[in-house]
Image 1: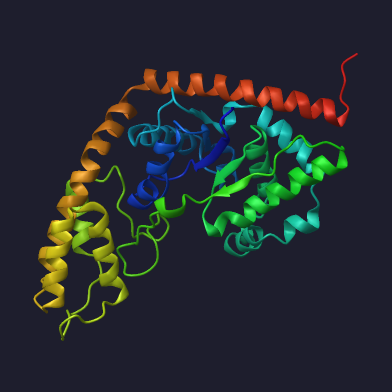
Image 2 (image 1 turned 90 degrees about the vertical axis):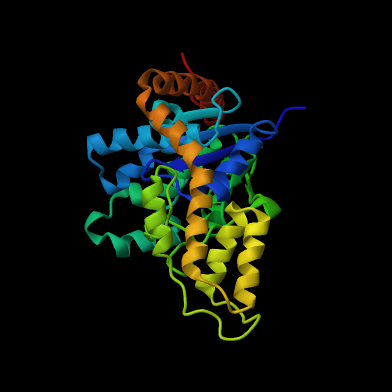
Length: 331
């Protein structure tokens, strides 16, 4: 029985942080043996913000190095760069022909971008969901790992797939389902006391951070003045610190500081120092692999080339089928 196809896009802007690692990448690593996995670096998508040529290439290189260092295996999955697959923009073009301006203008992400970058409301922003659908449908993916905030994007893909099937009286495209990892999903909180860890929020610890940077960030984490009575309910920033400790520290370490908190004897400075060292212990080997890989241009080129070959084999088959279904024929 063929394995189900799982596809996930990787933003080509910015570094991986602890939230990415525990929330997605560790699950991606586990999935590689159970599913036919496609992971791509979405450099076409980044063009909506007009990056410089130097930044575009360096960002792709950094992201590829980080995902390899974090455990993605190009021999067990297909890891490729979006712009290396010319079939994607052609499918994007064909899907644009069955997408309607009104529905695209109503998408939440387009409305948000219009507000946040009014000086750069380009056509790529409007048709962003169509390109996302092309990314997914080019491999006829069955499952797409998404968070709740991204599920509307997947619904649009499902809509386009169903519309294509209905218009051309076929059942060619499967309707991809969200893959949310269930009990394996871990949401890492930020260090600013609220919300999840993220790059744009400035509250993250990145996999390439040095030990000194990690210590500084953790020591600046938001806390309160401490409990005033035994077993006092924790405020959100303190809960976040303990949650981080539960993830990266030994169980007895987390238990020790909980006992101190419940006895009103907690010293947040001591807790932060311990938490920083435990985070460093998790990140350091990953950081070393990332730095080594980022210096090996020959290896990165090999990975990108092999990934492109594997992805194009799948993409070419899909595009050939789609062209035939639509009615394109050679004389």
